[in-house]
Length: 172
Ligand SMILES: Cc1cc2nc3c(=O)[nH]c(=O)nc-3n(C[C@H](O)[C@H](O)[C@H](O)COP(=O)(O)O)c2cc1C
Image (cartoon, rainbow, N blue to C red; front, side):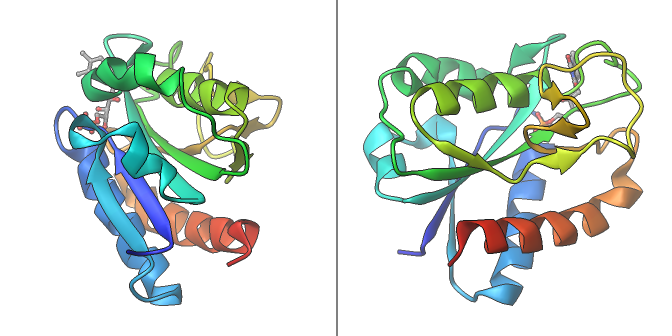
């Protein structure tokens, strides 16, 4: 078992692809450290085995959770994340959904903090154009923002930078 559990949900494959990109980038710094799971086939017990967690979630249906995260949501509300360090990456489309950009990542961040988690991996908003986002607090997002629809060319550099940041913030 690796040190870090990465749990993602994905309707059309983008978040799944990014999950494995993040694993690969992280494991360049720390080989064998990241275990990847689909939240749709995961239990609270599996998640709680890890102190260090990465959650991946796209926003769907104009400001809604991705389907598997939506199905898992009632269980999430009963989990105790005290002592857990959690970093989130969100996927969204700022051009198509500029009033709800990365909303689901913001909802997930709020929920895990409510359940006691320490949230890491905050990300600056200055390379994005959007009107509103539930993930936005002042000049940063509560998650990494990945936009495969409009800014896929920026994704590799964003991942490299974010992974270095969360590794430092995890402190492992
Ligand atoms: C019907 C539909 C609704 C969407 N709603 C939003 C949204 O409200 N906010 C957002 O940032 N992105 C939205 N998106 C964009 C997706 O989050 C984006 O395409 C993402 O990469 C999909 O990830 P997945 O392939 O892992 O499911 C929407 C896309 C579709 C097709």
